[in-house]
Length: 341
Image (tube, rainbow, N blue to C red; front, side, top):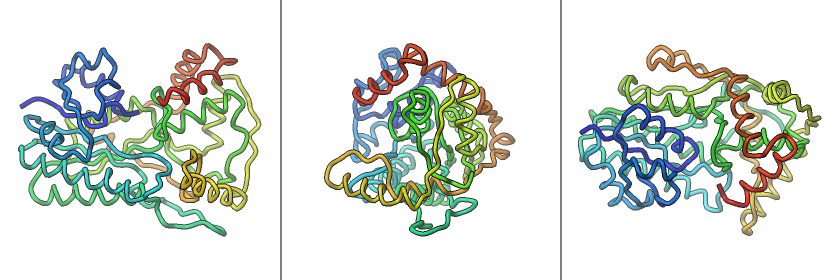
């Protein structure tokens, strides 16, 4: 058995990982809900099994005959009406996948989790700020516990935790950092949280894809690896964009206590069927200090991500290409939002 199964192949990271594996000469199978969303150049070169994560029979067929399973599929939306959906997709499906992997004697599973599965280095404080993790984060922590049990039962698995990902790809919630970049360039992002200059870790999507492939090949059984890039504050992130693009925008900082009522309203609006841009839980998340140490990933995997400056430069080139230049970035935003990509 040499086939590598990739779940979530039409997602933000999966869409970059599959071509990366194919370029390395790997035999790839994908488990996707809709094969029509695959790029034609990819669809013609992979074995496709269609099905949803809740379809355990289809998942079993996808796992059968594979040497490795790279499990990326997950629900990463900022808001869902029923928080239980995070656990049904991000936790229950992992249990089903691990059961199938054990049944079919898969040699290695790489489970793609998130830095959100870990507590921050420093929690946010203040009126209305909660230390409780988001339902998304809780579901990711629960999924990691399932993987650890799988390893304890004698199987082989590795966990990887990407940080705040940016780069070319669909403009969904998983790629919100690139969307912020585009909105800033277009002059549509004028306010941000007064976050006290806490740090997050920014990583280019192609580095995450490469890190997953490295974990499948070089990772130590049972280990959890941070797939990050460069630690930076939000202000430093926008300064880097401004410096490289030559476009400067004034962005005003707003105290969290002024944003939280709006976030609560957005959640209520989402319950009524509207589109949600922010929730109270995600306000808390952006106020947490979350730098990342990738030294173990460097030592064990040979993981070497690009700098924030190089990653932002390449992403800006991509944005300007789809937007037709600085003046048309907003058109690109509008087109991507309307197309649902």
